[in-house]
Image 1 (cartoon, rainbow, N blue to C red):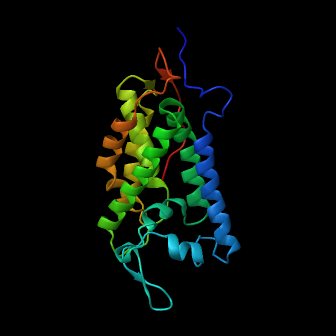
Image 2: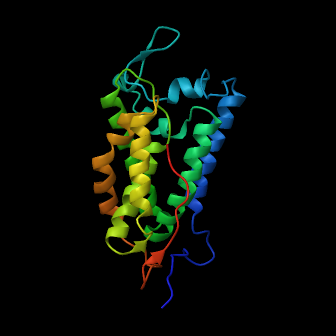
Image 3: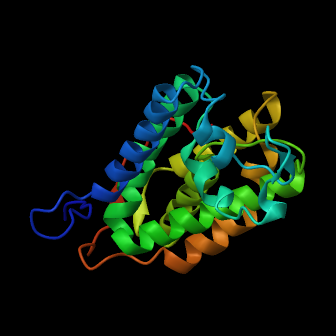
Length: 220
């Protein structure tokens, strides 16, 4: 019997949601540059009002941050990045791991897990560094990896341990390199597996032999 991977319904692109998420992240960064932001994705209106921070002050002296009712930062921060390298690394990882998960569990479950994981990562970042400013899609990507790990443990997909290896490598990088949000990664780890277990059910397109796949790249 041949291995198989979900291919989506009909002629629709199997990883359409993943491509939309990548496009949004790239467009947001382009918007920051167009609005006068620096190459590092700071110093602009989008960053000022979208980055994750618990308690801060705007230039006009008014209060800013999640603690002051700006709850949207829990979501918007996942679409902001500190420069082109940070953006490219996360989007490269998202393309591979996100495309696979979207094909296997379906679009709506994939969107649900991505959003929930992103918010969980933001909550972890706030808990770990309440006075810090955090941006990046890493929390959501860790959730995607968690769902893939659950799927592999259930025998739905087969990556030869690559998913587990990627999680371990990225955790090592998280603690080894200064400037990476430990809370955004580690803080969402319990949610990573619980969310993954909740939605990691194969879509109708997946049947029979577990898919054999390869997962290049890493997420920051």
